[in-house]
Length: 403
Image (cartoon, rainbow, N blue to C red; front, side, top):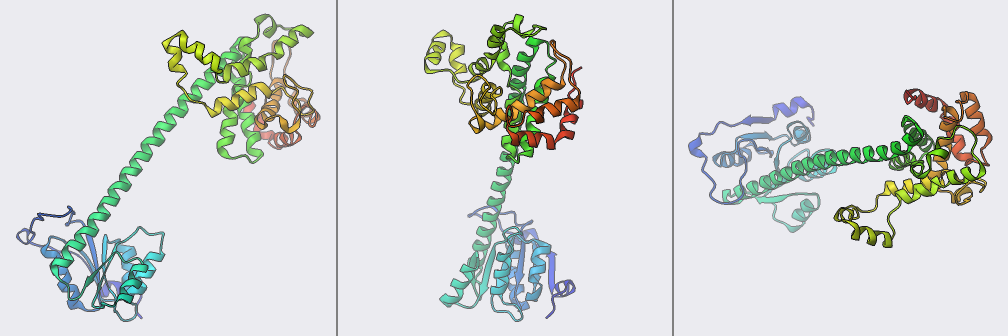
């Protein structure tokens, strides 16, 4: 059996036939096909059959042909030449048409190639077997031009339409991806501006919210969370202190220790954050709709998963693992995971950064404090993930250092 590439070249013909234009009648009916570029492969062990079929197609204007009488070279030629259509004889020595058909359809890594069966066999069993193995159509020998031409044209037109649809779908997907990326970038800008608005209340540079978000992202990655959830937690963590907008300056900017009453009022920032980020109640929506037309337009915006998560973060990032935190006194895994993660991220940044009421602690001391409060203040699993990524935490500190 000859199976090498040389056998394929010796027993095959790859040409673009030069056919006079006078022999190319214009089609009056049926779908339009680019005949000059359509590549048609003819496989038959009888050279005479190939010549007959090829000539009939040349008369119709087809010029690009791949032909072979060696059935063992067919698979190589299909992979190498990538024809738009294969006309395949069934009864051939060495490798039968049914075997070739089965092999072509079994290779799902290659683009779909339509195959029209050329056969003198008219028995129902043979045709059924070919159909089950993926034959596109049948043409009975001896070939009738009135049968051959429309079948070839229809199959090529179908493939042409499918390619156009595929190209259109690819272009549409690219446009959607671009638009999605633009919307995502805009949303991130809005979220970041909202987060920085809160931080500027206490004269922070705004890098704090970026650092906390990054720390939360790294912890989430180490915990093995899905990529989309990791991204959401990073964005939500940046809004953890948005409730500072509702804290009076005399408390927020106080350099000394807070009194019990001041600390109590300070703790309310978690609730303020929830109120800022959560959806309006039904009563509030009704009041807003009556207020101005602008308010009505704002309320048309649907629920945002990011803001829902940010609401939980703002409300619960000061809860303690042992239940002694605020404002709800939640304990253990009753605290949302994003709140537990942000608690560690926020505490680390507070310890390692200078504030109006304190100097920054040395890094070793910061990690020691976080580790020491595992199981009381913080979720032990979150702390373990945080400590495991110490080099990455330090890198974030350097990259997002306050100016």
